[in-house]
Image (cartoon, rainbow, N blue to C red; front, side, top):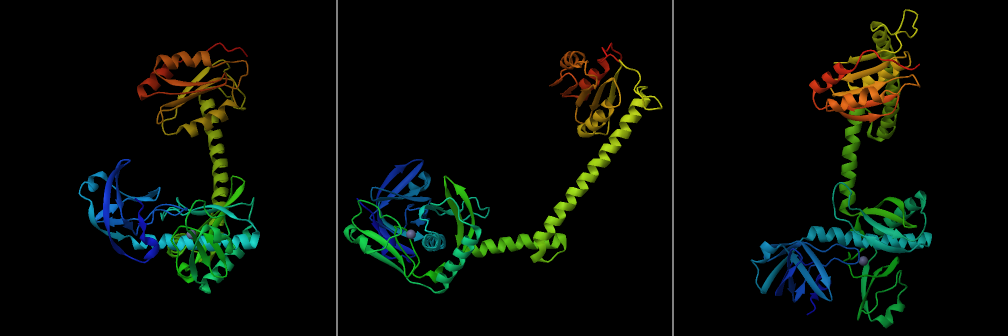
Length: 414
Ligand SMILES: [Zn+2]
C-alpha cells in the first residue's frame, strides 16, 4: 500500500500521528511502513529525514514503489508493534535541507539564465564541519569563469533580498507544458509537482522547499571544478553560510594572532611566512652541506685517507664508521661529501636508526660483494647498486657485529 505523503500537506508539522501497518526486515535493520508520514524519503538529490517514531530513532527514510520505509535498528524495532505511531521530525535538519534545496533551484535557474548552461544533476550533502559532504550541482558546460560565478552569487543574493514567493503547482502531465520548465519532468507520474520561484525559475521537483526566497538567507558558491566534461559547482546556503563564516573567521583570527597581523592581511602574512621558511630552509641546507663536508674531511684525514694537501691517499682501503649522534640523513650527507674526496669504500652507520650506507666513487668498483653477504649473515636487510648500498638491522648488536665483520682493507681494481 502506498504511504500518504503528508510532508507535502503539512510541510511545517513537527509531530504527526499515523499508523504503523507493517514492520519488515530491511538490510541490517527493520523498516516501518506507515499509512502516512511527514518523513521525506531520500530522493531528487535530497537526503531522507531523521527523527523518531514512538521514541525510536529513525536512521534513514527510503521510498520504493510508493512505499516509504522508515528504517530503524533491529534492536529498537523489536520494541515497536503495528498500530498508532507518534512521528517526531528533526525540524532543524529538515529546514537545513529545505533551504538548500530551494537555494539549489535559484542557483541552477540563475546559472541557466546567465550562461545558457543547464544543471543535469545535484546532490545535497550532510552538514559536516570538514566539508567532506559538499552540496553540488553538475552544470553541462566545460567551464564557468570565476567572475561569472561571483556575478551569479550577486544575482542570487538580490533574488533572496526581494523575497520572491515559492509556489507549488500540482498539474497533470498533459498540462506540464504550460510551464517554462528548466528541466524535463519525470515520466509516468499522475501529478507533476512544479516548483515556481516567482520571476526566476520553474522546475519539476519532488523535494521540500521554503515558501519565499528570503528564507534562504544567503547562498555562497564555494568553487567550481571540471567533472566528467561538465562543471561541478559546490555551494552552501542558509545557516551553513553562518557556520562556515564563523569557522573561517576563527581560523583567520588564529593566524592573525600567530603572525601579529590584522585579519584582513592574514593571506599576505602567510605567504610572507612561507617565503621566509623557504629561504631559511635553503640556508639551513647550505649550512648542513658545509658542516657535512667539514666532518667528511676530518673523518678522511683521521683515517689517513686524505693528506694535508687534500689529496686522496690509502686507496683500496675500507673505512667503517658509526656516527652515534647522527640520524641517517646526516650520515648520508657526510657520506656523499666524503665519497667525492676519496677513493676508498666507505661504510657509514647511524646506530640511532640501525641503518648503514656503503658508498664508493670509483667507477670500476662494485661494493655489493663486500657488503651483501655479510649484511644477510648478520640478519640485515637492504640493497643497492655498485656504488651505493644501504641496509637496516633490527638490533644495535647485529649492526655492530656487521660493521666489525667488514675487512678493513681490500684489493680494489682502480
Ligand atoms: Zn526542489
